[in-house]
Length: 110
Image 1 (cartoon, rainbow, N blue to C red):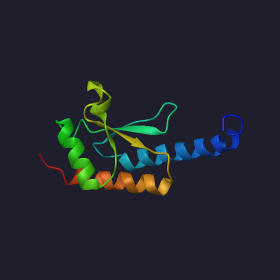
Image 2: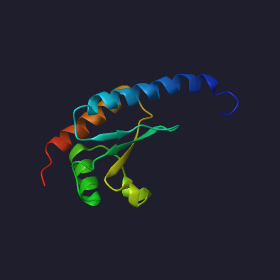
Image 3: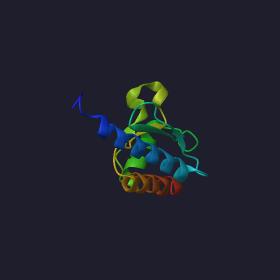
């Protein structure tokens, strides 16, 4: 795996870049922020403009959207009101997940 992964990586990197571009496009004109990855296959979604409570955010987004995300506060205080999303999948699945998250956010009211 370590000595023969060049072709796999050559295919993976453009796919991940496409996923990030798709997420950025989907989140344009929404209150959800995006922190693009730096050398990884996960993005951070920023919900600070929408939610005030990290636990409420996590429950609401995951239950309403049905999308599995990691709560940012699991990674420390700085991660509160962020959620981590794995983008190492097909572009179609990434776009579907973001659309579900956007729908969930659009129905949220405090």
